[in-house]
Image (cartoon, rainbow, N blue to C red; front, side):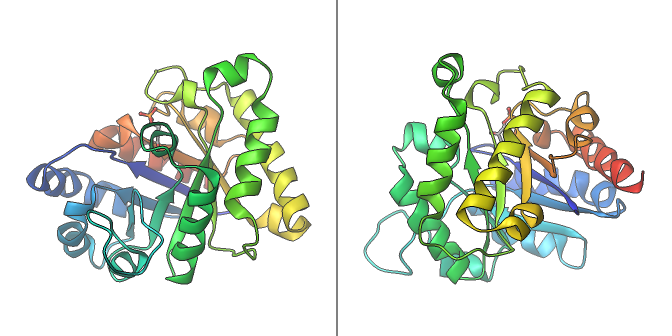
Length: 252
Ligand code: 13P
């Protein structure tokens, strides 16, 4: 499976900061082979960054999308607007679920619309701390996957990211064993929702306090096909290091 490393810049960087950051990391990322490298800056920087990375191996993603194609939805960005601009889109990030009340039904509509527009969704799932402590992780993940993918035919462009909420931005990553186990469980769910082939083929990333210091340990686990990186993707050297580590794993 080809490893995918995606950087989610979240609500950070002005246009000029984003341009500078991508210029700082571009050649370092571009020279790494065998790994898919995706950066997901804020919407306002997508067009400028698209031009800067043109001709390189670095790919672009958005952090969110609405499900309607166009119309009176003030402030929203449609899949059609993104389809000429970027290749990937993050859908159902826990911050969107938590702060913007996105539920399974909305996430489902967004995945459906993204795929229809030819975008590659990175569907995020993950349990909160209280759910984890109550032993509900498996139930939460199963429910989130089922609702997000309900009545959607399997599409090989779909990427899933397991992001336990308690590990995001806390500096407390899941252990590689924990992440590997839950991602295995996500794969079992995909086999039930679709079939064995889809479950084996779908790329499932881990996200939550991935750094240059723990990337190899996490990504080398058999079920983990890459990483969705937040904070460390805003530091050029750290993000390049994570991508290089992924490439080294690919070559072993
Ligand atoms: P951190 O890497 O900052 O914990 O964020 C993870 C994340 O939410 C990526 O989408």
